[in-house]
Amino acid sequence: MKFLYTFLVVVSFAVSASAQLFTKVTDGNPVNDGGDSRAVNWIDYDNDGDLDLYVTNGPQAGQNNFLYQNNGDETFTKITSVVIANDGKASDGSTWGDYDNDGDLDLFVANWWGQNNLLYSNNGDGTFTFESALAPSIGETYSETASWGDYNIDGYIDLYVCNSGGTRRNQLFLNNTNGTFTEIATGSLVTDHHYSRNADWVDYNRDAIPDLYVANEENQNNALYKGNTDGSFTKITGLNIVSDGGRSTSSNWEDIDNDGDFDLFVANWGNQNNFLYFNNGDTTFTKVTEQNVVTDGGNSFGSSFGDVDNDGDLDFIVTNAFVNSQQVNFFYLNNGDGTFTRDTGIVSTETGWSYGCAFGDYNDDGYLDLFVAKCLNANEDNSLFRNNGGANSWLKMDLVGVESNYSAIGAVVKLKAEISGKSFWQTRRVAGQNGYCGQTLQIHFGLGDASVADSIIIEWPSGIRQVLENQNANQHLIITEDTTLTSVNDEVGAINKFDLFQNYPNPFNPITIINFQLESAAEINLSVFNQLGELIENLYKGYKDAGRYSFEFNGANFTSGVYLYTLKTSEFTRSKKMILLK
Image 1 (cartoon, rainbow, N blue to C red):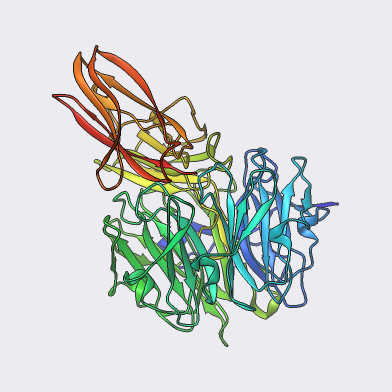
Image 2: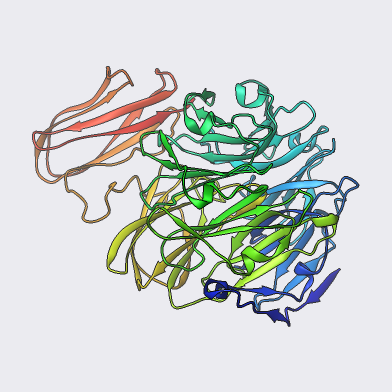
């Protein structure tokens, strides 16, 4: 059964100049349903091109979760007839992703209080099936949230679940690529005993293999597990991002300073300061110690990043809850120089207890709106803040994987544009979780006064690098992975006519193709080396005319790992990495 509610009434708050960024929506079911709400997901579950809204609820006695279908006219229809809105469990986090690669988003819901978790497959007709016999749905758990990520790079998303009670062992479920999962029982990422809240799949060391970062509370150190080529993980120690302790709840990996790598924000509760680390680009991090974002204290839970004013840099919100008094949230505007200004508008002055949050452009105007899950007295109305927009330009993207997983989780998107006379890159990623209890799969860029994006690079999880150039601003792009590509240059622009391309497929088992092109005839040497620099195979040595060439490398006789292939001529030398994954 459906109930249609329209947003007829909005209230504007003119607290300060920056308060005009948002208007609080006050009418309609999404902001009047009450509840003990936890997670916020902006997702297009019905494939109609706009963002729908899913909100979990978590009282111990259980409560149905909320599903709101976007009608495309700034109104929502509350859906009550589907199983994902009738679970009656004590739910915390939720993560959406197409685990069976059938073209629609499936759902995992994490439950606490010793209840089983819930895996739902999307039937493609607006309904869902509860997969009670599959491993992620079995067993009593104290789960906080979870995140999809393709850790073995086979084109199917796997699932990591964080637990903060019971055995306090987190869970990793390997996607068997046939609609089933196998729980992985070995490795520190599933045998450590932490009070884990949130997990991020992120390639922190740029080796094209997903790593895992876990936020732990109770003053435990957070954890970083480096992904290895054989599907195992190595726990990293010695970095400040895993040795600072704290009652950590949320983590976000975002390119805050627009330098091309992902920085790290960690939210802490218990009146502790939050953490911000800038990525140095060499697998080390510099901790920020003097800015307001790390000195404001708080009882923080959720966090979400987005360019709310479309000026070309990421702003963010941090939610606060679970102390005796009502709390305000922290909303920070990026100054574009590595510092932030704390906003004093309605987003920052509304009181209550706030949990998960997520930015998403629900009315398709190119400006990010904000939904905040509320839980004061286990019956607080949630909050929707509509962005008032402005003159700045934007681009939105939905990615569709082909060789990669269909949801494109793990993809990295880089965009170059000239904004206010300065040309620079911005970087985003598609993630299974965007901060504790928050998720938006859609990619959004603010472009300021730019009328065009000069270059867009999509780095797909498969290893394919895809380029779009001269894309007009103020449009919503649907980008499908181009599997005919083997590579593009690291630098966008005219292709160097002497060029070595990325192997395809990558990772591979056991055969991959290496392509290169020659500007003029030359004596060449195409060779493969192991990580020790030892030559393991010479693919070709001799004379070649100008043109493009392909060679096959067969790794059947070699072990899993990272290998280098090198093309040498008298005028040109280039090497690239490839991953043999058996």
